[in-house]
Length: 123
Image 1 (cartoon, helix red, strand yellow):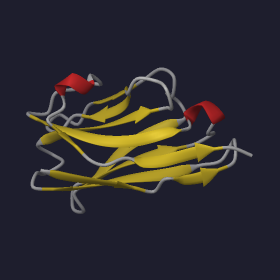
Image 2: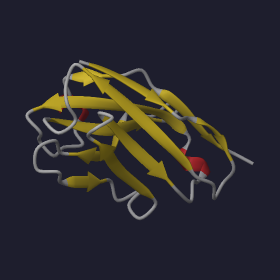
Image 3: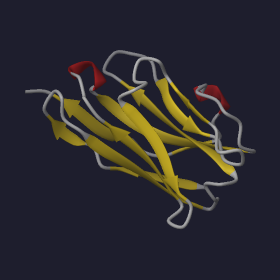
């Protein structure tokens, strides 16, 4: 299973970005795909997860209402729409996958990781 995250960049506070996670070797409706982020000097934390089979979603309270996870089964891609970005959202964002479709934001539960994409929120 391979995951390729893209869409990061530099954005001003209050702006928006959409991250994409292209998945190969698995289908997004049978695996759970989650987004994590790691800010400089901080631990990697879960942001949002789309459970594969049931389609349930969990989002960390720190971004709820601003970030939305979605998926396109035909494109086998999961997205993270990030709105009203704040400087504290600056981090490397990773997508990860776990077989069986659990709903989880625990990094230890993930089987596969993609390389990250850097999001910088700054004026």
